[in-house]
Length: 137
Image 1 (cartoon, rainbow, N blue to C red):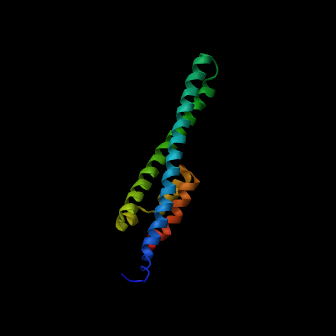
Image 2 (image 1 turned 45 degrees about the horizontal axis):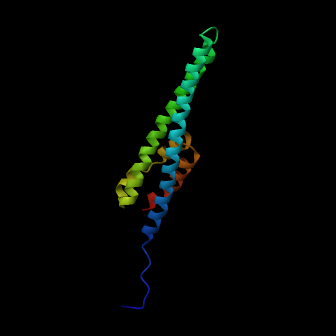
Image 3 (image 1 turned 90 degrees about the horizontal axis):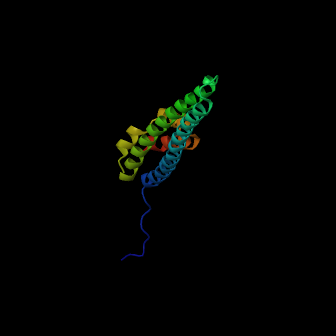
């Protein structure tokens, strides 16, 4: 037994820890965005059905139709958020396994921009912040 302290961990371990944190935050907030967009779409569909049933379709076709347009928009954002969620989940599994090749293959600035637009600001910023350290590995 020696009295010397253990050597410091390698630099890549510190980078992987920060990348893991960024990706975990992006994963959590992409789940929240996906659920929020899906609930928004469902609420607009319910509003459309309720509004159409209560007015019996007399002269309010435009107003009830606008609810369907909003529902479709929310559904598109929910699907795109799901795609971002699956990509981030793949990245999170790779960083936990220490699979740097898969992590570099799945990290892409285009997905970070899509996440920024469709899944919310926080997942997009976290993916943008993690892209630089991933490329340096």
